[in-house]
Amino acid sequence: MWMNLINQADIEEVARKILQIGEIVVLSGAGISTESGIPDFRSPGGIWSRYDFNEYATIDALLANPVKVFGFFKQFIKPLSKATPNPAHNSLARLEEAGVVKVVITQNIDNLHQRAGSKNVVELHGNALRSRCMKCLKVYPTDEIETNKYGFPPICPDCNGLIKPDVILFGEMLPEEALKKAYEYSSNAKLMLVIGTSGTVAPASGLPYIAKKNGADIVEINIEPTILTKDVTDYFLQGKASEIMESLKEKILYGK
Image (cartoon, rainbow, N blue to C red; front, side):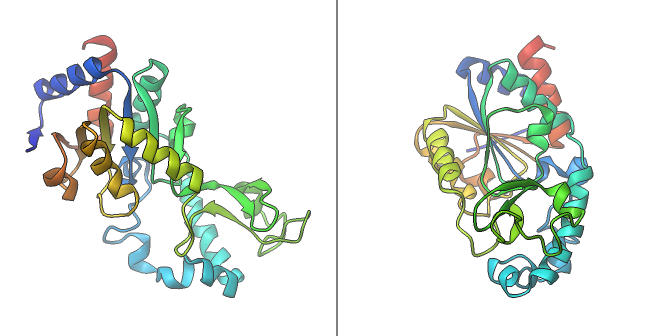
């Protein structure tokens, strides 16, 4: 059973629920960042409708033709580095500061939660503004890689390993520690706030089900209903993440 909550009275209901429960777990997807100018990669007109991910976004493609793939990385990462947090990111950071948000588990690689001020962020798919040597695992700022400071494709000066953006490519395993934390937080959640995710990309898509199975209330914020809406969502807040999160923050912190 789910409720289509579209007005301030309904947002007040969710705010009261969050205040009753206390610390909440947040799961964010591409929809939270579209208002920061970052397109949903899987949407019509998104990057995967214009590029074949098998050629540009798999670990095998990178190793087979690093020059081609790094050329793609450069144009792929540029809009991410220029984007700024929107009110949804800022509201979550403020709620974490107030002790309401326990953790943000994100599928996004844009670093916007951290730039907004969120401290406890679990990155399931990595972070495009960070790069890492595939051999010695040394971390480099991606903006240094973009300037060809370490060559093209970039090579680690310490070990001669290939440096790549610290994101999970198709064919790679998700970070074990991040995945472990995501499962633990989801299993122990009393309320999970799901923002801007389609609920179709595993393993993140399974986290709301884990939370629900263990007794959590699921609050979903999305422009349109998703597969989660009919399966596990208890409260569906339909609309822009920035507007709804700003309203929730004001209700929770100030009763406005």
